[in-house]
Image 1 (cartoon, rainbow, N blue to C red):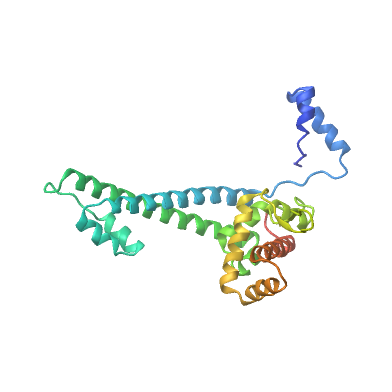
Image 2 (cartoon, rainbow, N blue to C red):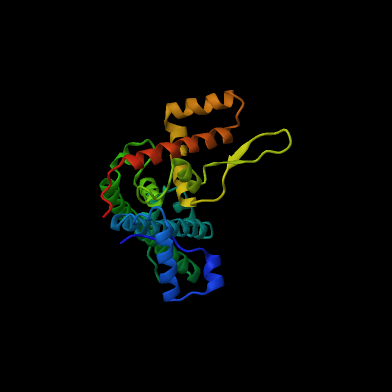
Length: 266
C-alpha cells in the first residue's frame, strides 16, 4: 500500500467531496506524480507516538498534583505545615501518602489530611506510570535508531520525539526541511540597516522542545558546546543568536544520523 498526498482543499471545496470524487482525484494525482509517496513509518513509529502522548499526560498529572499538594500544605494546620515544609519531595510524598485521620481532629484538619494523602498517592501513581512508559519507549528506540542514544543530551524521550517527527527515510526531502519542521530554520528579521535572523515560531513544537532539551543539557555539561557559544559571543553574537545557530547545527546533525540508520520500521 502506498500513501498518496492529500488533494488541495480548494479543489475539494469547489468540486465537492464524496467517495467516487475522492477516488478519481487520488487516481489523477497518482498518475500525475513523478514519484509516489512512501509508506508511513510503521507500527513501531506509531507505538512511539502513542507512548509519548500517554507519558506526557502522566507527567502533566504529576506536575499539577504536586503543585496542588504544595498549595494545600501552605494552608495546613501549623504543626503539620512545619513538619512537611522541611521534607524533600520523595520524603514529602511518602509522609503524605501515610497520613491518617482521627475523631479528635477538627473538620478542616481531617479534610486537609485526606486531600494531602490523595494528592500524594496521585503523584506517586503518575510517577510510576511515566517511568513504565519511558522503559517501553526505550525498547522501541533501541530497535529503531539506537545511535541516537549515544548523542549527548539525547535520552529515550527526546530520541522518540525525533523518530516520530522524522518518521521514515523520504518523508523530508532534506535536512533544511527537517530544520523547518523543528522550527529552528533561520527566519529573516531585518529592519533598516539592521540585518538579523530569528528562529521560526512554527513547525512541530514538540520536536522543537526536544532539540531545546538537548541544547540545555549540552550548555551545562558539554565543553565543546560551551566553547562554541563563547566563540560566537566573542564574534559579536548575542547568547540567543548563539543558541539559535546551535539548534540549527543540531537539527542538521540529528537528521543525518537518522538518515544513516537502518531502523526496523515494522
